[in-house]
Length: 264
Image (cartoon, rainbow, N blue to C red; front, side):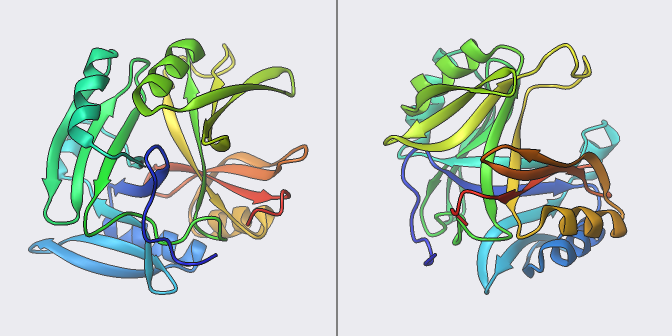
């Protein structure tokens, strides 16, 4: 797939890791996905690292401030959604019951961002790109492939994102549950499942990032050898692919998927 120069409104456009240990976190992911990296200084001995494929930015990472680590905030991935106007979305999100965590504010000349907590408690960011539009490669191996919301109230979540971003939704029965597809211009761009009583009670609503891989089993084995923890072992989803949920050595959770849909 060719290099991406822009992301339309409502499309997931960027992924960012906030980690307890920048050095070890960078070593884990660059080894796992064969990513390159560009360490951009923020201040002395603190960097915002662009994670790269073929020399192009596909995600980023930085070390969490010590005061946040001390307060118990875990390492985590944050998903960004492209929007045409961040400020308009901020007003609308608050009207729809979301909590604004940060922004809207400019990130130098790169773009303008907003971080919010949706009405069910999942954190997500919105991005109005300027000089930096977002991920340069999508639909390729070792890049962000899918985003999935785990929620405890699918109706509230569905109504919020469809009203905020203009998404459409479609219910798809899957293995004893109703899985929601979110669509833009008729094309699936994200999914949603409702957490059942089998989920730990202290698991908050969250957006999960899936990275496309050539072999789920190979990546799972590699992640474990690099110090990661396999939370959900390699599992088949009929007509979709084989996936696994992994926790990196610093505590951030992500998923990988080996698609069988000829879309990578």
